[in-house]
Length: 467
Image (cartoon, rainbow, N blue to C red):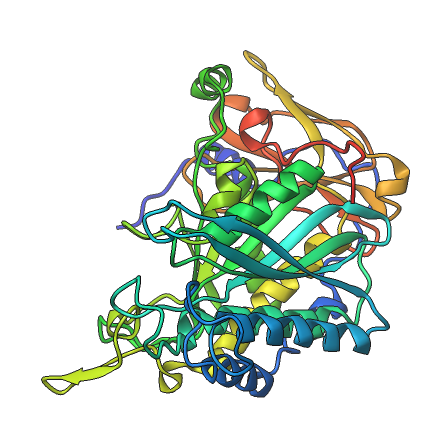
């Protein structure tokens, strides 16, 4: 027999599930963006296939492999990537700044002797806020069973030619547009030997004062059939760590009482990617994983997380371990090796599109609000405050949206647009019962990731930076 609530209780419950707030100062900009719908279907599976096949053709891309040959080894691969970024740049009138980022590594377990670890990046400078960066990355290098074997054929078709091919294709698609913030397309080296390419770029970005809003690291985006027997081309995983690795004791003490364990900027970046999939990518569902990475494994987002930057790993949902880090062989009827026949190019194009709409959405949007604070203890109301950016950095700023959700909900579920103000009070929304956040909204409807109040959720400030 269904439960029947007294009328007064039912009415109160309905009101609680609605949006009990003071009226917004002005109408919100229109939701949905035709540009993003177009970007969501623009990546080409054919072009991604061609790029993966080209990367596989270099035989091995091991970090310690040949660098002088034009046809084999890591040197030939990175030069081809550099030339491909230059070709894309020529197509957009020189809109990409293509360069190598490198350092010499030695004395490491997997790089005992001096080796120059060389990554390739292409920067698409923002028109209004070039010191704010969103980054997409993939890994150049490949490996076989023995991580120190740099001579055997190591195709690395899915791990991780797919990520590099996706990054190149995102550059082709997004270079046709202009953005307020800067976008970096990065092909990082040295991942299998210890995440060195990411470390080098992250440290250089920190030294140069980049305001990094997001890093989307793509590591294996082309396999749809897992070792578990599941074949699925409709889901993707986004790994996102919780509290910042750089959190201080004082910040941890504050977080203990105010929350934020699941609202780091990295977690809210993951929520942003999930939302963009729902809005703009047909037939794709994002599985947010509240973990830095898979058990006992790592990726090139981690060096950015280590320095406190928001960074996630985007990848396939069902891995096939016989096709990762394996010598090319057949044993007892089982075929091992990361070869081209294990890549689904349509799926790689879909995950590339997920990256592209997320990058574009953030780069078009105003910067995330800074200095977000919250108050409302022993009160019926909750008040959030934030600082607004200089007009020059956000010429398209329309206003802000205040968000809240139950503390057990994974995604932001309630919101109200409050206009171009620096604070807002949610009336009769008790601070103890929800998590809260604020996002910036552009005149075109673009929106930043949600920022949780306090140090735990901060995406940083608006200070002028070198670029």
